[in-house]
Image 1 (cartoon, one colour):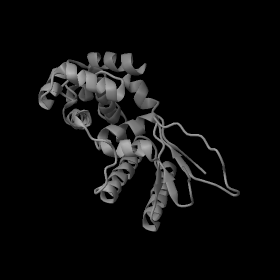
Image 2 (cartoon, helix red, strand yellow):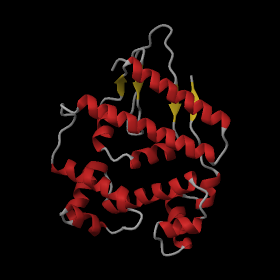
Image 3 (spheres, rainbow, N blue to C red):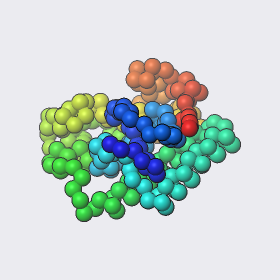
Image 4 (cartoon, rainbow, N blue to C red):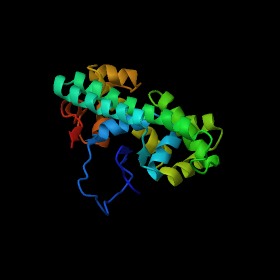
Length: 234
């Protein structure tokens, strides 16, 4: 793919790329997002079609107005990093990242509403609806059967669809979404860990802490105190 002046590339963790040729005088500016921030945006925006499109077409041809807006967004990121300290900085950065992807989603929807971006079949429909259900119910519903019932399919079929699409079981995806919820509370709020556990319907605080440490490798408080922020480079 050719990357020209005024273009924007969105390189998600599942995209591998290498540079084959560079024009004389080429330069670019980029924002490197932490895993936590891209994870939060990914799970808050349930438009599977947008993420699928960006996977196959990571270079966006921006209009002059869109380019101006993106440059303004990068200036906002610079301003937040320079003017604020945690936890306010983390909250503002997370919100700004979400706003960018939300805007991309809406612009793509307008530009491509009359085109077929990807092959749509029943499995595609199931995965889209499964993600939508996860964002609404993962804080209280952990059972695979709850989601399979809501989708009017068997747990076994949901398991096959998830393994084919993501290489993971529904249970693992539910737990992954739950971890995103915990991380969001830890980075975006100053709520005590005990209140986060209560809001996410854990049996008790110690159970949530054990779950988090098992999956992430540190305690919730250690994660909160060591949370990374994005770096901007030219």
